[in-house]
Length: 362
Image (tube, rainbow, N blue to C red; front, side, top):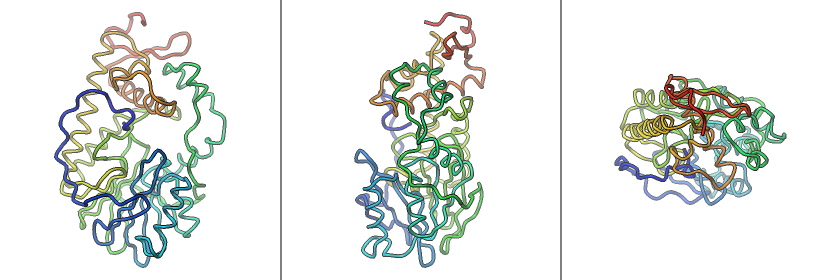
């Protein structure tokens, strides 16, 4: 879930996270949060930022996540890489992208081209990023439009729909593959790859046990919940089930005392409390959706109200995120026998509680 999708309802008290690193650096600047580990912030559109992490790697730097390809981001990276910037003119020797979204991999091609560094990603993230970038220059595919029509989109939204994948510099045609449980030597430290799913297909987090550091990407954020969506590429996916399983796995495999270095907002202590809250929020949302389905049949767009307390969004992109997340919740219930789905003559999917599946749609 993104800030734009945050449900407009009272939330339980946030866990008592500790933020030991002080004020965030200004966009285009950096702050050393541990010896040889720099917190960089790269500007995004609409005044937002994404965190990038620079890890001292011999005479150069390994950079984790890069920001979206925009002119302000290019200027920020030029300053970060300069002799006057926090990276002190030392070269980037490796670029790691936690996942395929443009705010994480969008500048990777530019950095790799500028520095000659290799791009490191999991296979699922790399291949889908390449596919999205290719599709972004094409008209919307018929299958994509059918997916959103099935979810209940009306003609104006369908006309405004555009494929994702913009704001990305050309992704390198070769990459180095990351796998779950891989151990990577960065400088004098060993980092273990921890793969999660749900927010994206094969999201790579990085855990350094000896340093007590955990680069969480979008898999664990301190203030907002990551969007968990089903996309037209795999319309029957159980993204919500994968996300909940990933949260549980991180809880079991990464100690609570790590300093979490997230993709957005500030580094924090309190990993396990935050994981518990993230899982709890999803289960509460599933309860609300089950209750709504027990009252009447719903399309995916009708699930916006019980899930987000909203029916409309400021633009089609946010509506796309909301739709993908609503379908993720609905698919999760269907695949567990807690909801049923049928299509009407127009190809629109209607969901209901199992005992009311023979009832008429509103």
